[in-house]
Structure formats: C-alpha cells, structure tokens
Amino acid sequence: MTRRHQFIRSNWRKIATVWIILFIVAVTFSYVMLTKEEFIGGTWLVILIILYFTLIRISKSIPILGSSKEIITGTLFSIGVSYFPLLSLESPQNLQYLNQVIFAVLCFSNVLLISHWDHAIDLEQQDKNLSQFLDKRETILKILLLGQNCFAFILVITHMDFFSCALMISAISLWILNLKAKYSGPEQLKFLIDAPLILPALMIPLF
Image (cartoon, rainbow, N blue to C red; front, side, top):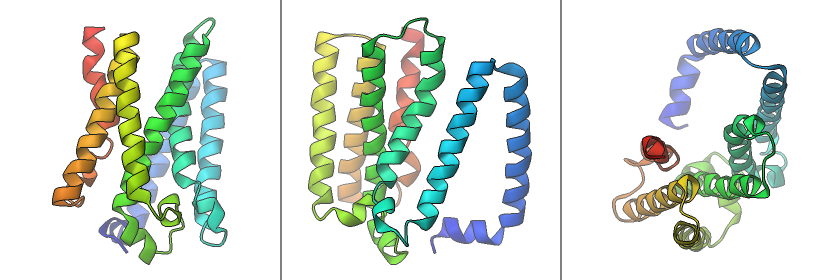
C-alpha cells in the first residue's frame, strides 16, 4: 500500500464521517441555490462518477475496464468543469463544444502523466490502468504533450483569446513537469500534478 492508502485505512471512520457531512451540506446547498436544470445536471454527474468508481472497483477482474480509467477521468473532469458554463449560454456554438473536447484531452494527458509516474506502484497493486497496457507509454506521452504544445501555440497565433492562452499555459506546465520528473524523479512533484489545470485561473483578471 501507498502511504495514502495506509492513512485512509487507518482513519476510515473519521474520513467517512467528514465525507458524509460534506455530502449532505453540498446536496442541501445545491438544492437551495441551483436552478432545476443545474441540479438535475449535477445529479447526473454524481451518478456518472459513482459508476466510474464502481468500474474502477471491478477493473481488476475485467482488465479492459481499467484500461479506460484515464480516458473516463479526463472526460468526466471536462464535463464537470464545462457543464454549468455551457448551460449559461443561450446558444452554445460548435467552437465551445470543441473547446471542451480539447480540454478533455488536456485532462487525459494530466491523468496519463500521473499514471506514468505511478506505473511501478500500480503494477504491484495489480491496477490495470491504461499505463499498464502501453509498452511505449513514455514515447506516447511525449508525443501527446508535444502535440498539445504545438496545437496551443497555433491557437494563440490564430485565435488569441482566454481559452487558447489557458491551453498554452497548461500544456507548457505539463511539459515542464514531465521534464523535471525525468531528471529529478516524480516523488517530490506529485502534489503539483493538478497545478497546470489551475494556473490559467491567474489570467482571469486580464480578460
């Protein structure tokens, strides 16, 4: 077990208590504050996430399910982030939907990177995720990260807006994390894995 797993197993009652309290507060707050469409959409997201955790739970028995972990994680994260902004638009354009697909690929890269870092741990735990099925995962990861950087650069040149700039910042940050981990090891960098997706928020005051 990892230290994270050991901590959870040693303190599962406290963690479960806190989780239940937060869940009740979140549901109550959502029911009071959100519109009917937003609440229903959020409920569907909760159902999808429950199905995702169920899938991961049984993935050791059905390896093909585990291999889709990174893809599903990236997709769910993108849907969760984009659902409410898209709902607020009167008539979303195809470009908005395309942006969410691009963001989902970025999220997939983020999850694939941490999966690559945890390859040895996942192998010992018999975690059948996508990283375990990719013989040349490091090469694939490099191509994916490089492709995102090139695509983001083209977007910034041709279509200068918040999304293209945010994509470039996130793509470059992921690339830097990957390079840093290659030379100094990933152990001290794991806590930064989600930073590339959060950094673009610093640009909000500029737009």
